[in-house]
Image (cartoon, rainbow, N blue to C red; front, side):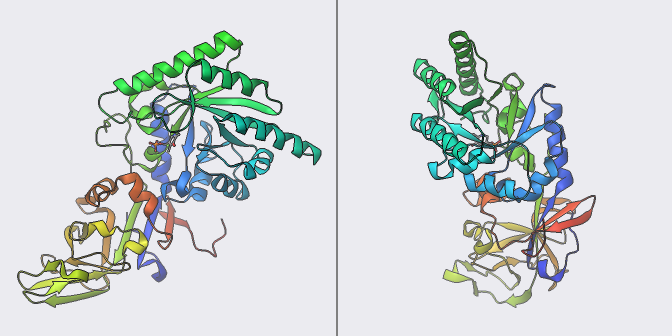
Length: 401
Ligand SMILES: *Cc1c(COP(=O)(O)O)cnc(C)c1O
């Protein structure tokens, strides 16, 4: 739904629908086993949606275990803004951050032996300063992604044992990550799941201990692999109402896109047959045309790859992008939309009347994919947060949240 916004947002704004965010969470929860809790993945500023308002909206949900980020800094900002639930960092963190991570009880992902030693030292250094905290860690297990993680075998077991025995370390969780759960054929993902389960059984058998929080599912797993529900699942893209891939079934968990993107026409003119449009003259008019200028460009994260390919909605009709997308502006053909005038609303992503433009579609057209499109939406695009049809807040520098 388009909202009338203040003039300063008319150039471009992303509407973030917090009701849709909640409903996506609830529908995912309905598809999980009752004891499974959700970890909200809000790395890269919540896939471009804004980590702070997203975290604030979700934190009160009782079935939300906590949040995941990719970096220490993303986690520190959440703590600074008052987020109290557990935060897990999904990737490697560098030693400079350990004391602060430990004192703020941010969960650290471990898979390197040197990290265990460094964490133990950080814990003892902190205790020298009167801060008595353990390093809470989640062990990362590699079952097929070949990115980070210990192997799910005797060598990996030795790492787990070392983590158990290292002073100052509390092994709170253990997890693995699917490489191909978003494909129709689940064989590869099932193999990873089995490898992880076998490894968990091996740990229990050899050490007699069970790690409290075990997790493996990402969004695709949440939708299509109920057998992979464990203590926690990690919800990323589906939180935002977007699909992990075209192959994931859309009839199991109903999702609503959280973000829509709007602008307004700033200029309309007629051009003659033979005139070219934008840099490089990649579009030439084959007849007299009416073209409109949209004040948005790749500087806002509207990809240059959409040159001569993208579409927008004006008065509920599709209008094609013509010529190259510039840094701050692009042109569309409104020859078939005579009603279009300067100042009219333009929907870049979202619904207008019967028509809809999705992030999946634009991601695909621009040679990216939806995740990348969302993450690339620029800082220059104001985010306007709505709830119950009302504007709740915006990410103005001056706004306090
Ligand atoms: C990014 C990430 C996720 C979330 O993935 P989605 O496909 O967006 O659900 C989960 N786990 C790990 C380890 C990740 O890096």
